[in-house]
Length: 127
Image 1 (cartoon, rainbow, N blue to C red):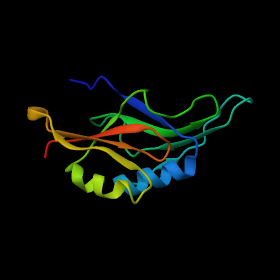
Image 2: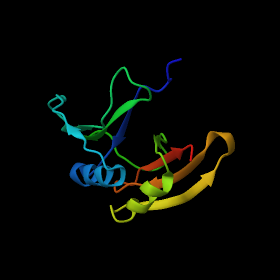
Image 3: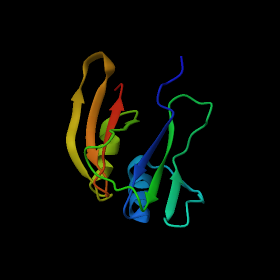
Image 4: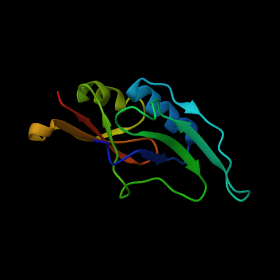
């Protein structure tokens, strides 16, 4: 069965700051990709690692003049092996822990954090 979600974008106001935050918290490199936008707006794009035919979904950090980041939008959950590892890196990377690790029964554990742009994202693990 294929996952329903196949792409996500996390909007930024300070693209470089956001890129450093996600690199530090998830200890992964993002790939900055040139994207052509219309002549009236600027767009920066950094892809999270992944494979199109792999499990899960792929996504990117995006700086687009026409879209603002912040709470109240879509909530994306990042898969982790053990949430406390990522939670331990959030504050040092400039973010905030909003909801520490919570047991959600058979589905595992979740936590909520705020990135440097004001976006709220989730962490989810089986352990």
